[in-house]
Length: 262
Image (tube, rainbow, N blue to C red; front, side, top):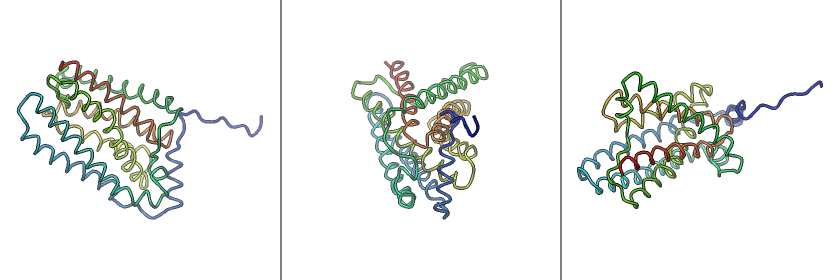
């Protein structure tokens, strides 16, 4: 049949690339550095302040856990405020947050990219774990733990799940797969932009790890999630599927830590 063209499969689509081409064509003015640099500075600031305040927490016990959760909840609120401040000019120019960074509600059909993302992210995480198991006889994987819980209560577990499974995926996907990835794509193609945003994402998860091997193992595991969600944004043009994958990734990690602590 002449003129027939096969429709690309979901995994083959480049929706984000098309969106960014349209964005550059309809609004050729540069976005500038602040849509990505501003959130990074806010993230770094909350980490520094959090580390200072954490030094005043009880040495052990439930009080330390409660303070850690409170500090993290406060940090996420500050970061979310910073995202709004630095992203609002871009959203205003694009006609809203959905057009600017792909922020919208979860849809019924998101289960398909969610399954793709879960498979890719967990396969990558397992691969990184096996690599560091071979290279360091498992030491790096043990040292890569950046979530510490001691004798958790039901209330502490609930707050931890709220933070790790609900708040963090939303805030971090808006930051790294929303503002950072799309700002970088105003200047470069998808894969360099995805690699750059994922590198920043991975580095921001290693500050609580005290060894180089542990930091590398943690960064590798987090990077698999980051690259997976960059890919999901590329094939869907939206952040919601990646948020769901991020939530599943954090849920599994949190359950493992809580079970070990209990």
